[in-house]
Structure formats: C-alpha cells, structure tokens
Image 1 (cartoon, each protein chain N blue to C red):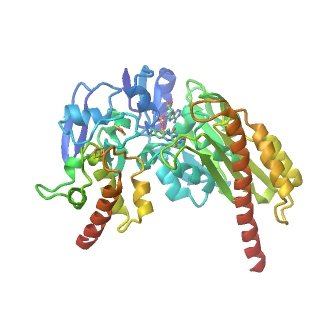
Image 2: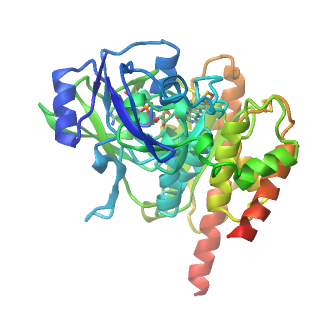
Length: 157
Length: 291
Ligand SMILES: Cc1cc2nc3c(=O)[nH]c(=O)nc-3n(C[C@H](O)[C@H](O)[C@H](O)COP(=O)(O)OP(=O)(O)OC[C@H]3O[C@@H](n4cnc5c(N)ncnc54)[C@H](O)[C@@H]3O)c2cc1C
Ligand code: FES
Ligand code: FES
C-alpha cells in the first residue's frame, strides 16, 4: 500500500509498504530518516520515540497505515538548520551522549517534557523518561541535561 | 494482508461483519508487538484511528460517563481523573508516557489479558462495556461478565468495542499494583477498590491473580453486611476482608511471581486500599458534618 504523511514539515510518500509494517520502519528504511533508532520493537526502550500529531509515541508501535495524512516530527526535525535545539545542545554539553543509540528518543521525549512543564522537578523528569532505556550513561548526566535544557528554554521563552 | 480504514463507526462494523478475521487496531501497543515479532499475522488490520467518535467521552443523561474505546490513557488521566479516580490511578501505571499516549482501555479490553491494569477498576466501579455488531446491534456487557478466560472475552467475532460506561465516583477509589520496579512493568498482581457510600457497598477487582480479572464477591458481601459506615474501621473486619480477597484469587506460579506470593499480596493490597479509601471517606464525612 501507499502511505502519504508529513514528516518534519515535508510531505512524504512511501510505496509498497507492507500492511503490518511499523512507522519506524517506514521512517528509517523508506524515507531515509535513520535518527529514530530501532532496538526492541516492543515499546520497551523508547529509542524510536517520535512526535505523532504532537504527541510522543513509540514509532515501532504505530502501524505505518495509521500515519496516513498525519504529522510526524522526528529528532531530525528538532534542530533549525545548523542550530541545535536546546535539548540537543544540553545533551552534548552535559556528556549525556555516549554510544548515542538512546539519544534521539530521549531528546524527543525530553523536548516534549519541557514544552509541557517549564521547570520539571527531578521526579517529573524521571517519570517522563521512564520509557527510555540507556545502557551507557547511568542516567545522571541525562537528568542533568534535561535540567539545563529546561533552564535555557525558559530564558528564550 | 489488508489494511482497512473505515472512516465511520458504521463502516467499521460493516468491515468487521464482512471480514470477521480482521484484527482491530487502536493504539497498537499490543497489536504491533505481535506483528513485529510475527506472533500472529491477521488476515487484515482494521484501523480504528479514523473513527473520531471512539476518541470522545460524554456525560450521559443518566449521570453516567460513556467513554469511547479509543480514548488514550493520557487523556483519561487528565480529563477524567477527577471522576474516575480508580481507573485513572491504574492508567498512570500503564507502561511509559509514550505507551499512555497511544494505549486505550478499548485495547486493554480487546486483549483481555488477566494482567491488564484497567480491568480491576472497571470491575470495582461496575463498568458496563458497550459492544456492537452490524447484524445484532448493541450489547451492554457488565465488566464482571466480560472476561471469560486467559485472553478470552465475551466479545463475538463480528463485534467491536465501542465504549465503556461508568458512573463518576461517589466515594473514594484506589488501585494498587505489585511490580518488580516502579515504572514500565506488567503487574505481578493488582487490586482495585471503590467505595459506594450511597448504597453502602464496596466494589472490588483483582488483577493478574486468576485466569481472568475478577471481583472478590464474598469479600464484597462480607463488607456489605459487616461494615459500620459511621464508625472507624474495625481491625477485625479489615483483616477478614483481606482474607476473603486472598481466597477469591486463584493464581498460578509463573516467571513474575509464585501463586503463594500473589495470594498473599492481593490480601495485603486489599487491606491497604480499604484503609486508604476508608480514611479518605471518613475525613470527607467529617468535613461535611462540620460544614
Ligand atoms: C512497553 C509496554 C508496556 C505496557 N505496559 C502495560 C501496563 O503496565 N499495563 C497494561 O495493562 N498494559 C500494558 N501494556 C499493554 C498495552 O499497552 C495495553 O493493553 C493497552 O491498553 C492496549 O491498548 P491499544 O489501544 O494500544 O490496543 P491495540 O494494540 O490497538 O489492540 C489490543 C487488542 O485489542 C483489540 N482491539 C482494539 N480496539 C478494539 C475495539 N474497539 N474493539 C474490539 N477489539 C479491539 C485488538 O484487536 C487487539 O487484539 C504495555 C504495552 C507495552 C508495549
Ligand atoms: S524500538 Fe520502539 S520502543 Fe524500542
Ligand atoms: S548513550 Fe548508549 S545507550 Fe544511551
């Protein structure tokens, strides 16, 4: 089947999509956006997190056909040209990126958190990131990064 | 495989009637895991995301809430948390934010897993499930009659779940879940309680400690007879209630816990949730009297 949807502001069409295929597969293998990572394919790791019509979801659990006509924003769509989003910047500065596999999903999820809550508490940060696994960092630097991003984001609001 | 995209509820029912093997997909948080791992491959996917009415809830003339099968957990928490507190508490424990943005009570009912977190509060709160088929119209199934076996429900092959009906809470409601960590975990066992002060009755729901979610009927009957609604909670009554809830369970040993542990834990959760609910009820009562 054919699936047409908007990704990062651009209309994309994917052809010959298998009916049981996930949005994640379509993004990575057909649209050429490998930012969202494929790790568990069962909603456990969050590395495939993207916005679907403004809400963060696991792209591996959305059937491609369900994205028809809808709006997707991936980690590739957060930066403006060469200017990184404050969340991306903070992840780099705080050393919250090691192997980087979990980073795109965490960045999207953290981006959503600070859009909704300007100054999230540590408990709110932990709850928001409960569905994102990282095998490298031990999470403390990730939480530092979210705190820093929230502070910077507030300055620019 | 086909991908069916009904735009309306009527079209969805027609599609299900024409192809009963078609698997409905709402949030996809159960269905897609099965597809990704090739656990089963349905003849067709029946995407319900376009049926906008499924994502709405309404307050009906009889005072009850009618909540569309496609309302995701995240919205249930923010929009209905005040009126359906037990269900909202359970919803808060489902998966992660990403899962709660997509997962629905309709899908939880469709999957009918004994561990589904929405089931105990639906049972405790006397929910009724509205299902419909093109051929036979609407059936209203009380939650207590919906669950028939492990992952088996009263839903017939040509039927779809349209909504659930539930009265806004008339008293305190609590949900409690045992898991191996405090987020992203399927219940080892769970328990829900709802106080119905207007008819001096307490509703219960046990999760993940029997082949189906179930009420602890003897425990409910015991409280209906023994609970003094104008007094402090009698420790003897509380203890007996816990025992009766434990006895209502018929758990199995599996990777998540032993039968003995589960039986014990649901009794403990029953005592705790009744205590929380009772304390809240009595403090509210006190407030009203003082006012
Ligand atoms: C990482 C992860 C964590 C999870 N954690 C929990 C948890 O803590 N607690 C919990 O209870 N569950 C959990 N789940 C399971 C899942 O999220 C829930 O069961 C959810 O309620 C399913 O809703 P859905 O809309 O996504 O269902 P879908 O996947 O769309 O559908 C599930 C089933 O219901 C059927 N169905 C859907 N809609 C209808 C309808 N309208 N009529 C008839 N049948 C229908 C489908 O055919 C399918 O069989 C988790 C899942 C994942 C991936
Ligand atoms: S790949 Fe989607 S959650 Fe792990
Ligand atoms: S940085 Fe390696 S998994 Fe998170």
